[in-house]
Image 1: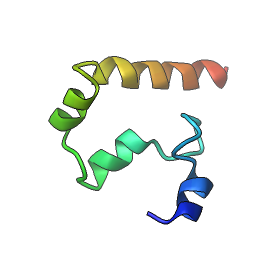
Image 2: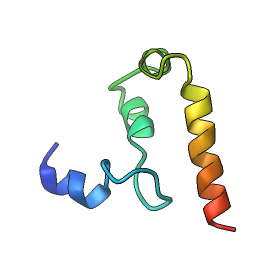
Image 3: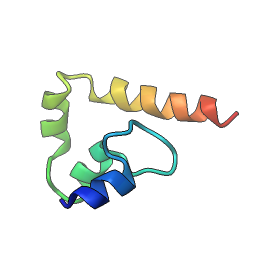
Length: 61
């Protein structure tokens, strides 16, 4: 991926509501399966995603 896209879409900036989530992108475009992502996150994929969604919901209140 070209650096300007990474800078523009913010894969390194953490999770915000206007930027694409790298976990979602890797699954949607078929780079990684959910099982592979769960292994990468040491069995904590659901907890990680839940924490991200929860923090976004709290920041929008």
